[in-house]
Image 1 (cartoon, helix red, strand yellow):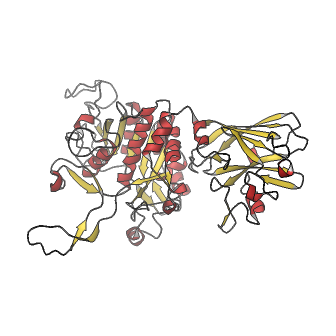
Image 2: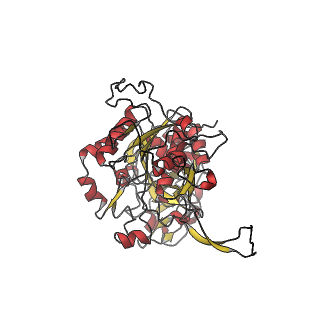
Length: 514
């Protein structure tokens, strides 16, 4: 099964969208409860004649056609299979245009009102490609934001609406020179609305990648960002050979725009594309890629929540080492893999199966964001052994059990100091570790975890410490075996004993994402 986002409503909170654009007009949302042009508030929602959304800056149903807003809308959901122009990511979704710039200019009040409007009128995904930066810590800035503004985002979360926001374009030299050094680091300085990912688990902050799968030079970045997506490269001057009249046979210097091609207000764009399309680049262009993907994911399976959507986006993403410093886990969007997860979705426990095999018996929590997204569940431990093992989990950086030492160096199973570093107090997951139970007994521990990581099992039996990786063990034997989905069997005797792997059986279950 595949989906094109049919019938899903995707709200674009931005500058005004050209709702008459031939590549958008078919997909523009229509308020079924409003009678066009009668000047009345037919549906009683406080917005008279809001047939196709609202202009919250100028308090009118008429948007001010804007290049940025129209471009963003096209990336997310321009019509597909219509024989013209481009195709958006969710090419058959309904675009709800919510103008927060108009002629008057934007404000937190306009954005807040637009969020409430989107939620109350059926949008399940919102894109917000706008923002501002502050020279203060995210913690300090969060405390200064108005409750009215934060409450709008809280309302979207409570109503199960997913929000994609652009990380910002302060990551290059220009930002350092014109503002302050490191302004693009959203972990260190404040970028609003990206800093709201620290409060709400339904928000994905989107970093822009370039055509080589590295961070785009302009893009803001940080470990609090949830995912990367293509946002276009900066325009470059290159040697370009174009045959034609007066051809010298030699390349000439030409400035080529490597941005994203999308819709712009009719007649204002590049003449090569009939004036209706143009190139732009920025995290504003990357964010609607994710918003469109989220729309497809939620269309594929209506049971998928906003929090599930963020986890599925990250679980299906491709880990790029070149993006590791730009976004948590170096994760860049992979629509095909994320849709595969969505189409087979039965619940949050599905995500734990993605990195499991006999060779790598670990729990994968890389779909978390180290922000507000948490996973809740239980571990069940049963014992059938003469020895009394103490079992638990420690944090690893990959599915092969690698860990960081205190200096940030990678230590792998088999390195001489592995056990001491793997089981230091910073790596041990206290809520699901140190479990010791009586023979033929079982125990259940509830947990709530919020860190993006891999969890690897360990056990201590008398003077021995055993791992799931044979290279880390003195007897060169892997003492844990994957018995089933998220279930680990432990063999407590040196050298493998009777090889039944039932001395401790640990079952790791996830109930919900929150």
